[in-house]
Length: 545
Image (cartoon, rainbow, N blue to C red; front, side, top):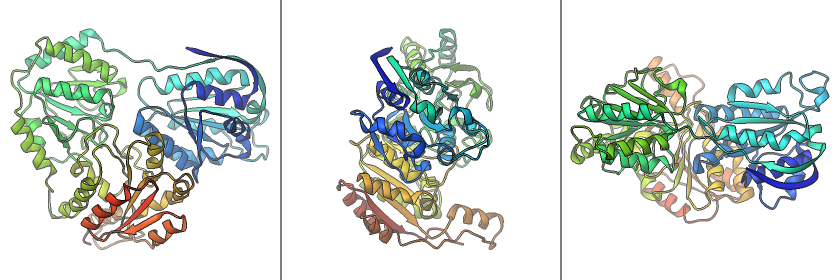
């Protein structure tokens, strides 16, 4: 697909016109002297709005949040050198969690690339910094290459497993004039399943007594989610999700049992469904060692494993049928076979599944119960379709099991890389991309300080997100780990925090303090009625040392 343009422009204009042709409506980034040509072109753009974060790490997380909320690639525009090193952490998170983001950065003039001449922002190998955290990295060396390179970046980012991509443009290429007469548009390529493998999978289903479905992040998608639900209902099969799969099926659906938690535990009520089944269909998951507790999760065998990434098939569990294909296309093919008669011998009853689901949502112990009181308050005040962004914090770890989610793309978590501080900028990106949804950012007090400067972006653009900080003046997860491993020997885990209510006030952001679950529910319900950012500081003491 191409769009006709026919005009002579600078490289920066060619870049922005190429982004417009790909439907980009927002870029996240901080302008610098090396990106002036691109930003001057953005000044004239009638299609692309700019969002100004306070740190390039925030720009990366915002682009990631935009993707997670919509399924459309988010775009970050980054300056040479320190801008690139700042965005690496967010790129690493996007890579680990299969997020489709496009990072575009400048570099020095062509004659100075990868040399050490004493230039501003110079690096020995800027491309080498980005390659480990992207699936595709490319540098253009002339302005005429820009439209084609942008098209290839979008083709790459939308094809196969979701990962970030990186496009690098030297600053003299940004300034170089070029005549462009067409703008190619890169479109993603979808991999259809092998019909013979679908038939083998259908035969396994027909030979099974009862089926168990395990859904990963590849199912947390607006197209895949209804197909997953249809398959579960057709087979009478319970659906358990991984952390990244939360929302793939509504957690009050008759065939949903929820997620077992941040990691697998043999005490999980869901184990009974695994042990009572004799076939697993795993969809859109790598069955990673963190998720499966080093492969100890007792998935029923045989295993049908469906994933877009061929490197994940059979790596941790023996696979009877491995289908490397698009999840939606594969589920459509399987549903056709099932409706033609390839059904298991028995169905799990709705009553059996409900009993496990209810047990899974009950606090496992007195400690969990303290957290669940706050999670229930959050759920009570939050609309079913609201987007909730999590940080690496104790409340969010417990939310994986105890906070029910009802729609795809409404629960985000920095699962793979485990970065602190991603929740606030992720929420800002999500809200920009989905202005029709309420967005709530959940934070711990320690992690919040990694990116709390993005309150400035929230205030600047008046982005109406609600920011909740669970505040115990401690890096709690680490202190708990020290308690377990080295009782009484605590070091560098207790914090001196700012007054978050006053901090928000300094930005002109409304802020309140909620001292109990009931107060949190009331404050959150009120905040979500306002078309402005609101911060809620929640003092807690939920751990015993």
